[in-house]
Amino acid sequence: MKDQTSLHSPYGLFINGAWQHTEDQIDILDKSTSQKAASISVANRQHVHQAVSSAQQALKQAFAPYERYTVLMRAAELIKERRDLFARTLAMEVGKPIRDSYGEVDRATQTLIICAEEAKRIHGEGIPVEAAPGSENRMAFSIRVPVGVIAAITPFNVPLNLVCHKIGPALAGGNSVVLKPSEVTPIVSLLLAEALAEAGLPAGRLNVITGHGPQIGEWLTEDARVQMFSFTGSMRVGQWLRQRAGIRKVALELGNNSANIVHSDCNLDQAVEMVATKGFNNAGQVCISVQRVYVHSDISELFLAKLKERTERFIVGHPLELTTDVGPMISVKEAERVEGWVKEAVEQGATLVTGGERRGPYFTPTILSDVTADMKVCRQEVFGPVVAVEVYSDFDEVIAKVNDSDYGLQAGLFTKDLNLAMKAAREIEVGGLIINDASAYRVDAMPYGGVKNSGTGKEGPAYALEEMTELKLVVINL
Ligand code: NAD
Image 1 (cartoon, protein in one colour):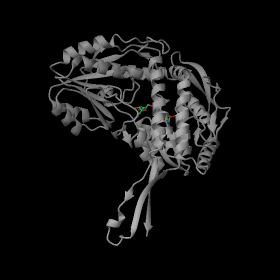
Image 2: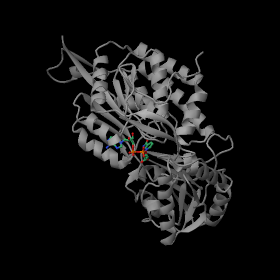
Image 3: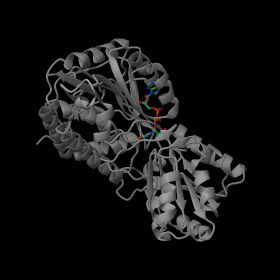
Image 4: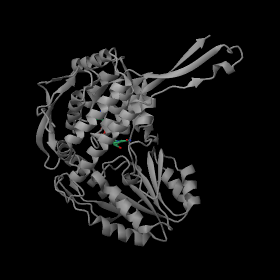
């Protein structure tokens, strides 16, 4: 059993099954101290060209569904064996508390296993063309074929599992991948590439190029050999990518300012627990993190008192401490931005119920009440440990408030009333409505993706595979 990596800083680019180091490098900071912990290579235009060439070349070698299954299953095993290494790396480069880092590693292995299973289920269907007048002597069926070279671009906050959600279905579908991970949390994806190579992935099927997002994005989009872009990240970059990609396939998993309704008839303690734990997980840097909370006026005082009490019990601390609930944000700059938004909300009339304190990259779990829709903490995506609470009295009114957003990824609703729940299911404009849990619910096999500015296309291996394969029709004239 090999539980150690042979990779070390300075890390290289992974192109055509080999590591290449560059002179130009980017520092990777330990997010708990903001000090340099490692450095990575910076890809230039030539590296990007090589990566795409190797991905395209690899498509010419057969890679049967059973081989894809075997490689993905073996890679999942290797990640399990290196669980400690992956979790410690996540804690260092993301600042994610170690308990949550182990959780992400375990989910990533599950994601790869689901992708492996899906590789064996790819199929087309019989098409009854003989039902059309004049086609009585024909038969037809569809098959699913790879899209080709897929560029995957990923964000900083869940850098292992979200990468598995792109690489896993892409490889399961018989494609080749050029991965551009976040430049602030790239190391786990290099460890993942190493594990996939050891698991027997043919050279060129996965290439990892690290470096500056805007430059690499430009070079990837101008290369016509890239047939699809699968992007997870901010709305700003997603929109830019869609404009540049032209008629090629684009899947976008973007941001949200997740709304959660706490109705008067709900199980209050359950709602408090879910809102608190899912508002501050990963320091709020989760795309479906609880952000806007609408609580019914009959229970608002009690809810706020309980939420304050529960929130103040979270331990803010070093990511490697087992007792830590909330670690640092990704950078001091981001923590300063969130601090500014909270201060601005208070100046505009919001009440600071708890939190609001910053120490370097650490920002204490924060609850604001008396907020209004146009404050930044409501209108935009906070992507930090801040929950903004507003009181409502009418259910139609609260649905309108939830829908008054540019985003639509997931929402949460706490109620025991089935009729209200079904009304919300019909009327709330989101990709997923979570009833009696908060918006931040995801298991890896489920369809996941948003409407409005939260993106287009669905992830979850079976659904991503539909995006990452083409339906090809075969008609036989008998
Ligand atoms: P980001 O958009 O700044 O960066 C994402 C990736 O894009 C990085 O790899 C970055 O280097 C790259 N990039 C930057 N500019 C680029 C360009 N011009 N062309 C191509 N690539 C470019 O996002 P982030 O700060 O890393 O992540 C936070 C965002 O991601 C939030 O908005 C969050 O909601 C979103 N997110 C969404 C989901 C989801 O599933 N919907 C999941 C996680 C995060």
